[in-house]
Length: 220
Image 1 (cartoon, rainbow, N blue to C red):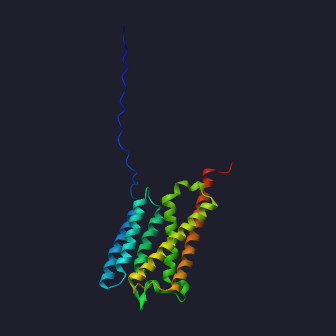
Image 2: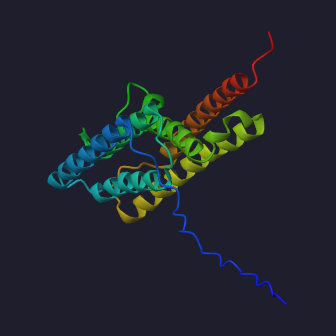
Image 3: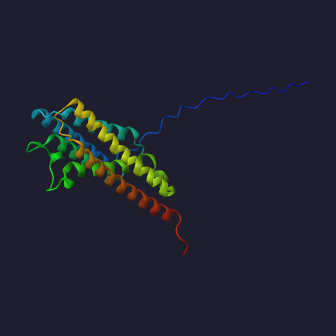
């Protein structure tokens, strides 16, 4: 009598899959990082030399934002967006640390409070910040853009603006010489945030519509 023996195969666990790493840095991203690093170092040294009261806060904010973007990045940022982030870092550091008259560059304006440097940077920061958040979390699903999702991303931009206002308020509690301003300044900041978020929402909606047309072209 022949007994057939069955061998049981032992499953060998495969190698652990590592978390997906970001792709290589693009030339635009490397240039943006260099510009941001040089600006942070240069303006930080300038702030220390001139005894600017908020030097540490401004340097920390730029470094923290850069760290968050680098940590969340999984593919190269579009070149215009990387360049815009570097420009915002320079604008933010210059606005808070360069003295203009009795205040700082953030308080300077072209004849009217509407055209204050602070409001320009606020609008630009919320615009770019909204586009960055959308790029990091939703850009692969461009073709699924809908009016509701556009509103959501616009509200996300307003949320970024609210975070900024919170940081400014906390800065005034820590440092009375922060040059942040009062209620009128906060009101204009909020208006600027709305402008930046709405423009970002319109850009996102337009990009989503173009992507949708590319995926589903009209039959000839």
